[in-house]
Image (cartoon, rainbow, N blue to C red; front, side, top):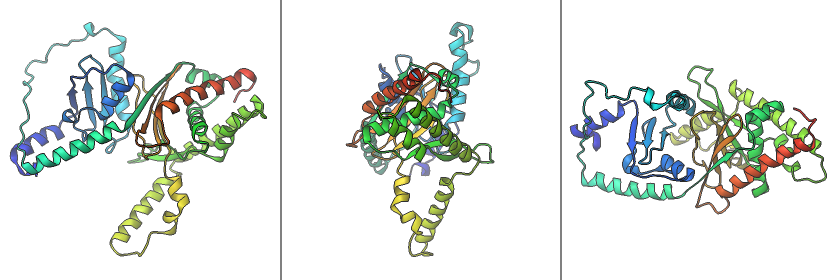
Length: 359
């Protein structure tokens, strides 16, 4: 094993105790999609995915951050990146002291002792990683029609509005409402992490069905949007305040699985065997909003036939990373991107037809 050799132990300790990892890549990604995919699942020879923060710098000067989600959520990492990059965006680099700190030790190459067994495992892992990375279907959307500023002028909650846009775009492709996960932060509690906000509701379903219904007026559709947004806001507030159900049920399910493994029960509780429970936890849309100043965040889909969507609302635009799996026959990141952009425009047009409608 790697940790049984003192040389390997020392190298691993250096990595584990470092604040972050810097990955210097020889690639020069040109498009946002190329860049995003190389950050998300780039050269595995030049990554250490167990680190919370990996700063990846490419040969053409573009740079990004790859984060490990297990020990913490995206908000602290996003805040850190903004605190570093915002001053650089506002001021010239010439104003910063870029001289090497006196006494800084020279970089040293870490040494490893690798057995045939380890090399074989590495080879297999590389092959599996390559298949997984090739399967990622990433699209980046920069919608510049409007952003949070216009939505607030209409007295609309931007986040709730974006959730309705995502559901409308999905519905237009798949003709059914998607079980939707949205991250709700519970950091007001000691050791709090997240809860699930279930954005798909009866109210959201009524709205997304209405948009292409020519028998309804623009005012009718806006009224349904209003109901859907109010419903979503309540779901989110409840989740933030610890009144969600998903983390509680997850704990009970894991506890039941452990008892089943230990022979303390003969089968799982009926609720966890119910098809409705399984279907409601198959997140066709796994979503999160990260309002950062500096970059476009993103993550992969959590089910094979679903999408992973992270969006960054700004005053006059929305930046969004849309991920799915190429192996899925029913999903397409490119098509969903097109439908999201269309949904943004179509819903705004409702307000142009009925401009007196304010939420």
